[in-house]
Image 1 (cartoon, rainbow, N blue to C red):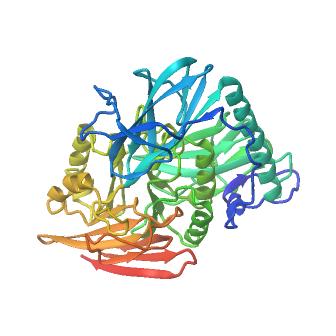
Image 2: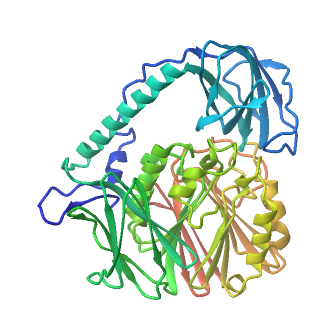
Image 3: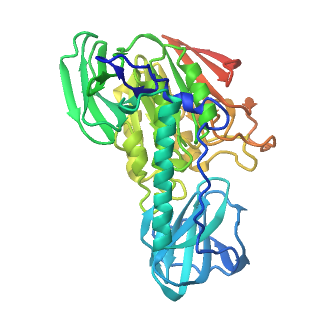
Length: 525
């Protein structure tokens, strides 16, 4: 099941439908009322613009003075570049500035950093003349400042209340859609992640308390832990045998889930850029559920706005139908950092998705070794010294050296053709190219470009396959592509990939939204 939506253990009730039912039409079944609270002021004209300098720090030493007149919305093709905007405004009373940009924003008012309320909403105090300086952090190809709006505190409070009211109506609608009894505890999940020798079981709850029971047999759930809260996490040590668990609230329990130990012949799936394209994402997840996979990998941009808890709630609900009995290794993408460009710490990603408490991690399964990297911890993108040192250490580990198959997973690809003007990221190439041969890297799998691409290159005797799987739900790239690099295969459609590994033989299969086969490849050692 996807949502867990508990069905009765003592009282017979209608069995709720899976959470993904909500998203099984192209237009979501919930259509919120139009927000009727408009900003006090929308600042469209009179902006001054300049592009940032190469090597700008997250906290710049010198604030620039943009001088090129422009109006909003403003969008330019300046990949991985800071974009600066300046405007002098009047603030009649204390309130907030709501900033919409691509990808994220920082705000200074009269030369001082503005306090971030949440996401890209910033506090502003009353002033006859306030000089607003905004830095848009473009972590993709084109980016810019879309809209800047001012709300008085009173009006913003009303806007928040209206959003709360809409959310309550949405929750009621969800119960109706899922055919839930009003007294049934509504839980979304569970979904699994794993780091080292610990499984993390996450679940969203509107009922208190919640208890997880687990053990080595479906009828031997001899361990239990009880917690209260909205987003709950339980930890289970990895065992050398199958283990089982269920989650209960009051007299309602989930099914008993079975988590299997490693098997020498196995399959796993990988996808990227679900990016709030929930209708497409739930279709792909439904098809993935038909397989008996050992685990799944998400290659970043899991949501469209990383600071929006409702998007994470939906993502988790859809994923949980597939990842309740297998770990999901979820890599952060640039959009998972949206709203966190003051600290570059994606708080909600870590709450909902991070397997290891940090955005880069490694794991092994059978004869395979995996390293997940994150270039978004620095702006515009970069691998800091700590992550690089960790990466090189992993390449020297026994787990990596003894593996038959070796995978690097990250969001930004080193090579890409399907996004016009984008050829992949040099930062990634600079890290990986020098070690391709010595580290015997077999696969580099990424997202970011919203299509399926593959390219095979040879480094001495080492053959490396570069794969992009950015068709997990978000909007696709346009028909036009870059002239270089010339990829071996490029298909612009929503998809997921299933790998099958049997000792020295590896196959991968690419499936579209209707589960039709798009591509298949075989590699042997």
